[in-house]
Length: 178
Image (tube, rainbow, N blue to C red):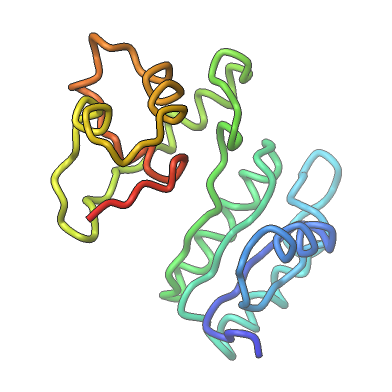
């Protein structure tokens, strides 16, 4: 069953398929079949945003997730949707945009880097309350296999090892923490 307290707004049916394949999202969707583009004569009426507003009034979700593309038109559409939902007292979130998983900053275009940097977020403290663990403590410990120790040592510069937090490496090596 779908979670009716969540509503994700996307530009096209293909976006629904992409989210369904890549996420565990189980809320409802509203498909715009486009994005605001005044130069092309596409305004709120052409996208059915009056229908969306009626739906939000009739059955308000707890949260509306905006999943428009990071284009000028997509961002304008997202802004319009955000204002609509907030005026109705509905919490709004947007999917993240930026550097792709596995991507490297030096190979990412300037506008993507700027957007990712501008959309940065605070890092949450460890839910288990563990203090940060310096990399050198992991290198000295014997729960890494010899091959992992070599790879791990290559990931960090020895001179900076004590200033790095090991939590970012824990998942890579499936280390038993805590």
